Image 1 (tube, helix red, strand yellow):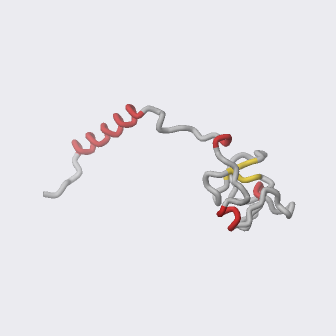
Image 2 (spheres, one colour):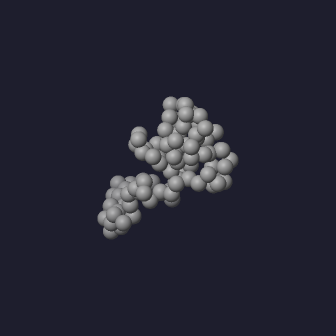
Image 3 (cartoon, helix red, strand yellow):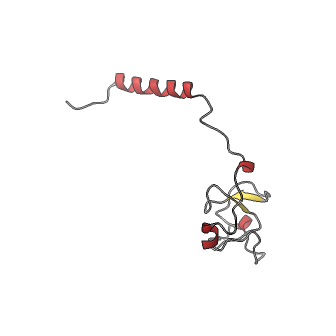
Length: 100
């Protein structure tokens, strides 16, 4: 016999999900603050592979002017999609630079 989705099964699964979220509380979802994210080190293997530096040698090419940078304009250290889980210097540069 094949399992066919039924209204009763849907309600059981839905109710189970609601109960799980309710009992789980909000401890499972913690906001991440920039202060909690480490700065990217120039000697990090991925940073070294992409020639990342904290201070760009070319004033017209720096992380704050790149399409891959995230976060708030004006912040000294910001997230970058190339280096997940690390912050890059707004004045930095790497070979993945893509002008905004």
